[in-house]
Image (cartoon, rainbow, N blue to C red):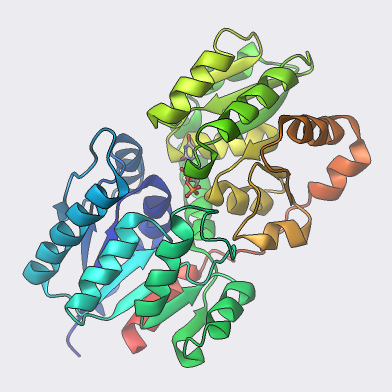
Length: 373
Ligand code: UDP
């Protein structure tokens, strides 16, 4: 049997986190010739993941530009990724999730009639402006893909409801659990990979840690300001410290630095590499976030998550009781966080390790599907 050539395409931090386990699996498997193309829709925070995972791209489009528009980015992605496909002539293209890179990769493959495997298929919020533009990106990929790797039964059902052929939909789990297990083991083998928070841990000794992340495009403006206000108000408590790795997006930085710099028990820090973010998840009491990936990782670790979004395409954590939607109203965020910090019963009801998103073997399942489909 000749090996199948798989071109895996990604460009942002969360895609890299969710695809490095598959890249490892394909590399180690004689059934495949694996090629990696990164768009670098993100640059530094993408490179952080490539480095820790030991993934060396065969192609790097280096497309990140300041103040890039969505249409400018998409145009550059389509032509850039198309050229790579013409050169590589892969048997399959793999994309993950819902970014402009993933959508453009799927479209460029479709223009060449190359089959597409969609990792993390079928997530739907039902609202095309939340998350924006990712809800529609994901639907476009769903229309094109020949192999849909749905993380959960819920996401598989969303696809079949949209008349996707059930024979092409497979519940594989979410590869983020593979990534989290991999990085946890790496830290176990080499603890120095995650000791960079020691100063912060010492500075806040005796306080409970609340982790915060926020970067959603639909929260730019009022939403981010409300989140900053909530963090500032929570920082008035002297029994907690808020550790906030600030996303490099200038829209996020301007608001957060302006509102939160100089507060005694708020640490505004640079984005953490994946081992250090895993460490933050480990030491925190709870997470406040608008991130997709953190909504998946925190339940796996039994850490309550307050989701600062109006809606989510990941209802599983909420149904399992480890995540709660709190929107972007500062009063609600503060009240819900205080409730978890003050009411032990409310806290333990949410702090149950539960893993609706996978068992850590998703990449192996996807590799088997790529070999047999
Ligand atoms: N993450 C990280 N360092 C950070 C913040 C987040 O490694 O400082 C990881 C986190 O563990 C998760 C992913 O980045 O796996 C989430 O990415 P992000 O929130 O940027 O995007 P989303 O998941 O919302 O698409």
